[in-house]
Length: 259
Ligand code: GLP
Image (tube, rainbow, N blue to C red; front, side, top):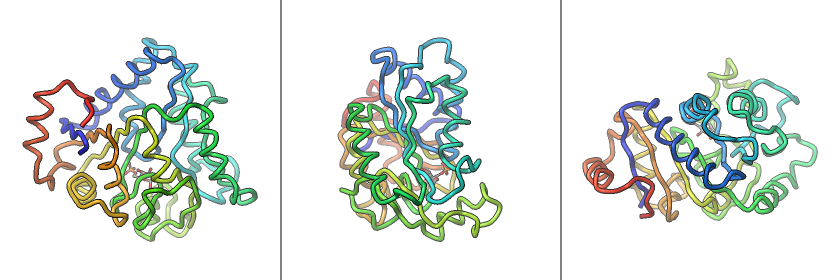
């Protein structure tokens, strides 16, 4: 099962996960991070940014989870631009070390395989940050995605396009397709850290952590991983049947242990 850590708020979650990232980079200066976009990982990037003087991040490698297909080069809502703005610049990562799946229509057929090859060539991902969609997606692996899927093109659900329309103005402007690390790709990372905050994520979190393993809830695949940590606030924990157990287990343990 996943280790579930219920924190007071997103800021506390950010500091908690930033500790883990900084420890990792101290132990392995060329660590490979899996970078997620969306609002959930922002507190982690903020916390690392505040402590950037404590550790040299210039040799860290990053692989983004996903990208929209077909946005014009440099579009401010492309995940390439988002990762540059929210992660590479504030954390002082070396731009050449940070990879985002290529969402250009030309070459899209081979882009997924090339991305998985690049991840493997970097030695695999040490710590993969994840958010979760309200429909239980991770990356852009929408419901029905194979747990063995490689990086590939996925059509977005109407729900996801509605959820993401806040960044585009209108749902019609949200691209219809994405290229995303597959669930198989994500499961190969050595540590998964899934973040979720707020009531709107409570159902997806409960299904992912306590529901049956099903491709209808792509995030339930984390139950297959030997080291998955779910860091959530009270509101996102509300529908968990075993919240008290997670609190007891966390109080009894040193964090980040394998379950
Ligand atoms: C998008 C991203 C996901 C992210 C999800 C939730 O769909 N592709 O990686 O987890 O949004 O975003 P947020 O954290 O803003 O709720």
